[in-house]
Length: 367
Image (cartoon, rainbow, N blue to C red):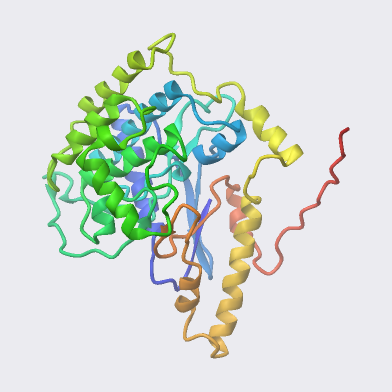
């Protein structure tokens, strides 16, 4: 579930709703694999709007922590092929994502759907065509404010330039490199507080990927980077070339079965999530419903402060909730995520004043 407080300057929830509807229609008519949540319902109260989507599993960041190890290379290639499919669908529908990263990609709900990846969070996505029928691209803007995640955003985003499909694919490459190794994959992983260093290293990577990439990264990624580096803003993407390069990595990695699409968590995820909740050994987020109520309570307090003159308006308080995550996320509020979901009736009957009581079970020590 996602909610958005009324009165915020950035109205992103309507964008997400529109994108989900258009993607669903496209996937159905073209018989494409569903790498996106299905929009179940939407509505609004006096204070906020909300949408309810299908329940899915944890993000790839969380799964990696649950496994307590880096992903295998064969698993990363399998993930890369699925994510490429999702990005291609978005572009075909007429949108660029602009904030692709492991935290915005989730597994399906275990145990039956956890082999499928889902792309989420279209809060800063943008339509790229003037008209979907003519497929004429919108004019390139001269300057665009920075919205994104420093660790994963493309060079155009850093330079406050308009982004096209090639720039979305650049962010895709950074996502795949991070999945190979969250420390060695991206050369700037330890420089996230230094914007100039990040830009310098991203430029160096695209100028000479063979030199800048860690030896553990398959050579096909260098060839993909070289291909993307030769594209211009308006150019379409040769997704089949990228797919062929990715699949060729399987033979380079000498996997036992090049056609094996098994993920590292296959058959394990449900148990890992259960053990994580029970033992609290893995770092998992707070219950998503609890987070939502906490945030709604904060904004209610902000409204009271605004009415008493302590804040100029409610929007100024909303700005204080701008995300700035450990991976360098920046940008306007895009709605409050509760991606693990609640049902429709619960959403429509929420009371902001009284968050639900959560009984804490005493953990038993084991010798």
